[in-house]
Length: 314
Image (tube, rainbow, N blue to C red; front, side, top):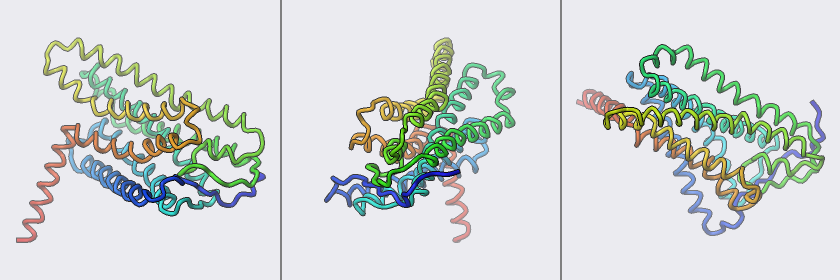
């Protein structure tokens, strides 16, 4: 592999206009990051602790929480440094690694949300055959497939970027290394790279979105056919958390990349901040506050912890 890159570090500008508000933004971002990591770790602990949560849906949820923790850790600490320092440098190889992880983890979330939608479709549409279809072996195969498909596209894109010719201009008008800001550093023709990167959006974003939409169309039809009100409410409660996460995730993602006018602007940075920093926190909040099984597992774990501490103390 050969590239004509004379860039050793990249300068992330972040939000130059914050000035006197940077301390406030820094503190808010730090609290959000802390809550994100703690909340998602708590969900993983609850899923591991409670036998009632040892089901395919929560197995997939655990994978999403791992992805959210990794994504938030990949983006937020460096963003804190950029904000408090009014810009910060990052090794160029570190910049590419950050973009790779961001690309891979966002792709992984798309596939995991798709698998969870299929799981909810089976649970509501085919409850009698659910356990015979969604076996532990199938869950493991789906997870391995999601991780594999998430790691391949960014590897190809990074390889193309690495082989491109850079002009030596190393200023990135963003708070992390995203695709478009990195592409702007290349002085050779980038049309092929951009076309190929956009091509990956079909299997990575659009195909999962279509599968999710079809799954929920069947779910809605099934729920409407349930005769009892309590049965319909129970069916809705089993997929309401997942549907909320899908709406937030795809809403921000499509708003971000569907409008070219957002590129290289403060609005684009704000949208990026939302789906890289806030969405991982919202996922944990939604799955904890709107999920009855998670609440019950939390109460049991807290009671067990307090009981154990009380016995040891007295």
